[in-house]
Image 1 (tube, one colour):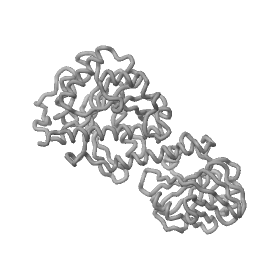
Image 2: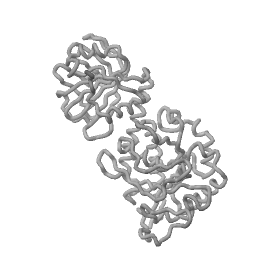
Image 3: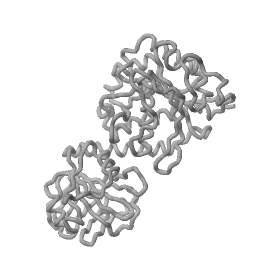
Image 4: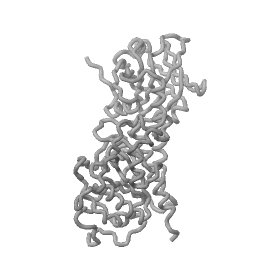
Length: 439
């Protein structure tokens, strides 16, 4: 009879997101193979890297260990690269704590001793189904349980497809930590001086630059799973015919985040096709949600929801130009001329602006090891230099992102690029708000 895991599909996908492109093979299940440490050890020894899952009534807790399980010995201790994580109930995100540890296994228990303190250790007693979790982990993982409590089930998985390399795991650790730090910063963001409750970011770009995909990618991160609310067109036709203002709710508390993304029709080099440049001043100040675009005539105040006396909250606070990174080298002279028209209108309205370059081939090569800046080789690429010359946007405001399109799983490195770009937009919007006249 096949042995099945207690992990849900979403939880398994979260683990794959945490570890990269890996698969999990169930080696041991306490309710099937016996609730003894030796039973677990016999099935897991010399199986390579593993994940040990403990299912508690209040949450699910896990330990990743790089390399083989330690040999059975009461006194043997072997350093290993490991980290702990949890799936708090009613939350989509995986909580992770990266702490160096040594492991020890005996007939009675499996113990992880954390190097931060001799008194900080995690122990697993299979026979009595008791897990002892140190206070340090309780705080870091948001574990809702007593320090020593009974669990329901224990499972061990072999992690297949992972590099048996401590450097690779350390990069995953740093990426996850940096992603979580960015998420915390953006969740805590409040617009400058509370002048508005939420900032509005307008996405502008040629047909096929995937503006709508960027919104979907941002929403996916804050929802904890891939989503496709905004319909995406092809590379040659714009599917966005309505002006859409999208808010995003945070999965952690269900509240709307303090920003909105505004999706517009794509720009086309042909006259009478795509976005109408003369609409720019109106869009920056007075256009309502779901306004129907027309490439043949400008926005008119006769529209029933036209905002005749816009307040600061109705305005656009930052414009993000969205380009396919592979197209900036060969934009036609007509398209460049149209963008310069758009840029002139935006500068006349003194609105902050950045540029997003999408469809990066390999986000792993874009970031430095510290995940804080783009590699110098990336900044020097002709596509970025062209965007700088064409729009006159400083290199520091030209951002590289790799959006979610056809993927089925999320990726911490893609998240870092998207969240970094979003943070830069918030800063640009704050500069705009701070620069407003005092009245």
